[in-house]
Length: 76
Ligand code: SF4
Image (cartoon, rainbow, N blue to C red; front, side, top):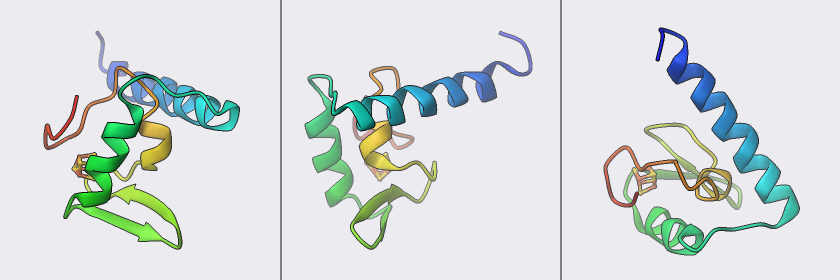
């Protein structure tokens, strides 16, 4: 992949995650991922919205993309 591969992949995952979130779609590992993030010391909350302080992702969207990974390998 070229120099722009990672940003493009990230953008695609963000679109996939938010699309799945809006449509209420999950994959089989989504709930386990979210539970791990809820217990993680690297999370943060804005109101009731859960984020990862390392990748800055909105967890309910990130957790819906099968190809996403936890930056600390707490889930994959
Ligand atoms: S993605 Fe990983 S590091 Fe980030 S909040 Fe979730 S479990 Fe923690």
